[in-house]
Length: 40
Image 1 (spheres, helix red, strand yellow):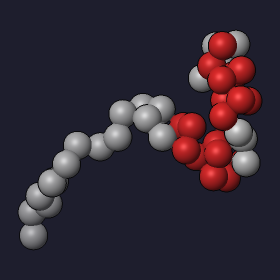
Image 2 (image 1 turned 90 degrees about the vertical axis):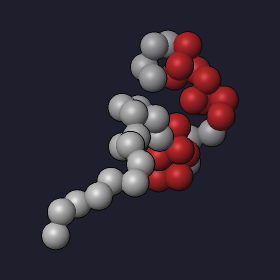
Image 3 (image 1 turned 90 degrees about the horizontal axis):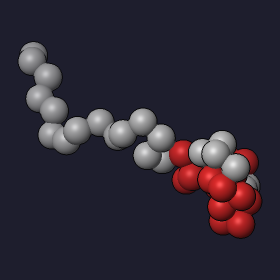
């Protein structure tokens, strides 16, 4: 059966913040610091 895609895949890094928050418990403040430092 041929595959039919109904939506595009996520962009690279699109869910990074959500994953870091859910799995590692990183808060908004720390995410902001990581962004400012160029890590994210």
